[in-house]
Structures are given as C-alpha cells and as structure tokens.
Length: 233
Image (cartoon, rainbow, N blue to C red):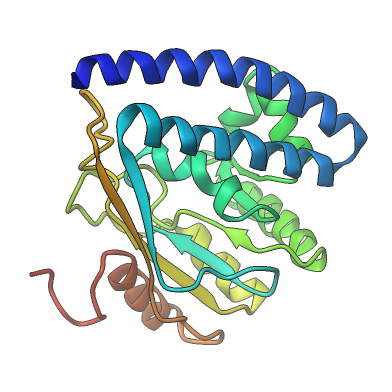
C-alpha cells in the first residue's frame, strides 16, 4: 500500500506540477506579485497531494508570522517543508541555493517571485548579494525565510548553522522566529514516503541585536526543539 501511495503521488505531483508551473510562468509575466500568487497555488496543490496520496498531514503549533519585519528560520529535514513554504508564507522572500535558479522555467519563475539566491562556493561576494536582495525584500514588507542549517538534516541530527543567517540577523536588525519541525520520519532522504503528521512548532522569538554567539546558540537550540544550554532528551 505504501508503494502504491508513492507511485500515485509521483504521478499527481509531476503531471500537476508541469501544468501549474507553466501557468505560474504566465502569471509571472504580469508581475512579481502574480508570480507569488501562482507559487502559492502550486504549493497548496503539493500540500493536497501529500495529504491525499501519501497521508502526510501538517500540524502547526503556534502562530506563524505574517508580513515583513521578521526573519523566519525553520529546521530543514526534507523537501516537504521546502515545497510548502509558498503556501505557508505567500509573500515571503526565500533564501535558496543558486542552482535552483538554473532549472528551466521554474528557475525563471522563482527569480521573478523575488527569491534570494546564494552561491555557497562564492564566499564574501555571495554574502553581499544575498544581503542586498534581503534588504530589498524587507523594504517591500516581505518576510525573509532561510533554512539556517542549510542542507537537509537527518532525523534527530543538528548540524551547525551556516554563516548566512547570522549575516542577515546582523545587517537587517530584525527579530528571528525559529521554527522546529520533524518531517524526516515521513519524508526520508532515501526510501519511501510514509503516512504521518509533520509537527511544525513556532518557537519563542529571538530579539534583534544580540551578540552573534548568543544568537546562534539560541537559534540552533530552538530549531532543534530545545532551549539554549540544554541537551536533547
């Protein structure tokens, strides 16, 4: 049954995405705002497919921020949360690796959407480009969403933070909303996706202006479901 669920999901996801992404590309020709509206539709479609075919449901504990003036920093365990970002944060500017901008059609759409791209190999020049794009997004009253650990982590793993989130925090002088989640148990890096509930928990806001070491310790602990200075149970 699980194998059948996965096959049906793959069919619905890819066939539907082809149609929807082409539609979003047409919407993106009109304006970046329309590109974001189209991305929201696609993301909601993916959410419906995961629920109907895979039996994966999303439970949100707490109130997610809406509007600008904040950096949202979620844990990253699978493609599930990455694909749901436009549904959860319709107007957000999402920090993503530059390779995604090179995907035919989709890359142009996410560029038009106003996503923020970072080249992980380019060091200081990549950081400057990311920070400038983020500052423009803040001026447009959009949330900034960044996965602070960068790449996907396996379940119960807590890799170190990437430097980009500290750079954004220092330059933009905005509070940060950490978000913990547990998607790897239903959407593993390898193997079949399984039914279950992904719990997304909004953690206490980290105020702007903290020293870097304190900020990073609090953020790293929060997205991994802990309080700074404690260890996981």
